[in-house]
Image 1 (cartoon, rainbow, N blue to C red):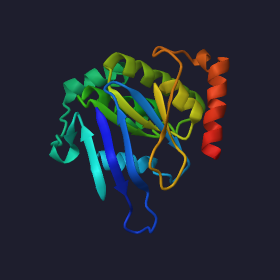
Image 2: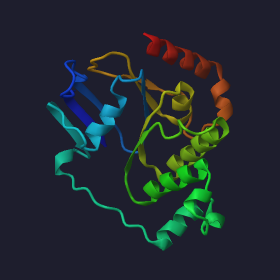
Image 3: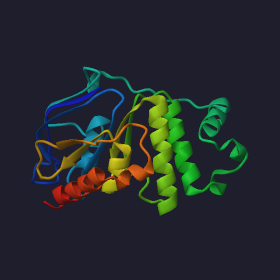
Length: 217
């Protein structure tokens, strides 16, 4: 669904190139996380995908078409759709409440559900749970996993939390260099309908340590 073909990018205000001839692809319906040190270029990948930045070299394709040829559409949401959003995320009883009366977790669910139900086939999620408390974050991870299994959307997810990446992802891309010309792709050896206790399996614990070591390098 998404393909980077030899993409190079450099911010005008910096002398150093951010990425150099980067190529990778994400298949339709995959949940892929990108991890790496702060400032390595994770969010820049998202900015390039959604057109906020333009590469100096290479092409970015979605469904085989250059992103420049894909029209952007505004999603309209009326009360009926909004009510469906609340119903979808289990918050219908809060329909008459003002946004300020909703908790952080509730607002996150509504935000994600709005995107999911709007028809977008690819979701770009940049550390969406970083500001939440631990228990709410765990709940949101499990909720998002259920939505992915239900809607079969393609999700690109940026996180600094290695365990979060393992729990949610089919594949994890690791950025280890700057500038970077490739990302190490690692498959998470868990079924799509995984459970929280799967994180305690020996091979998953070892994978977590391996990923942390890669980030330290």
